[in-house]
Length: 176
Image 1: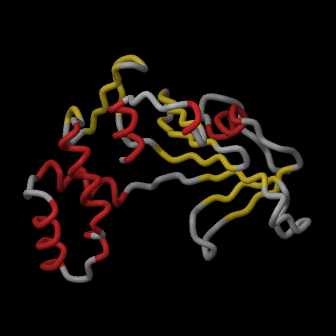
Image 2: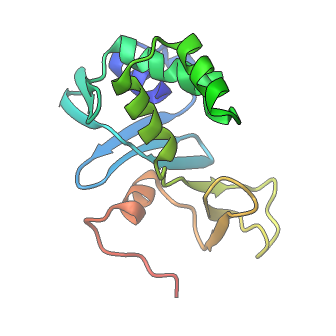
């Protein structure tokens, strides 16, 4: 949601403040890519996009056009921790405290917290490199240590290679 808000605002960022790169890939797969010098990661991008790079509009099935108010409401809900409430009454109370109850916002929020986010991270990690236990170049799939899958890579990945490796319209990559 923060990336959507940033893209929607399209601010002019001074070159000295830029720490990485964001790419939005919209085709048969919708993914967002974040790049820094030694880490790249990608997530499913759960919205439709129309327009040009200077005038993008984002859409969802529940909200139609996602304007500044709708994105702010969703971001406020996500940041509030409402999804961590143990009791439905506490969940509802907190939800209503954060935003005025709106069935479309509720449906979109529910969709987002149930979404398979498709997290994949590429690391070039000389600090923690440990031969085959923690290869210099590797992919991590999933967030937590208990469920992560680490795949060692022989060489450094380029930004475009990460896109190509998850692109459902290009040839598949094989491990063996």
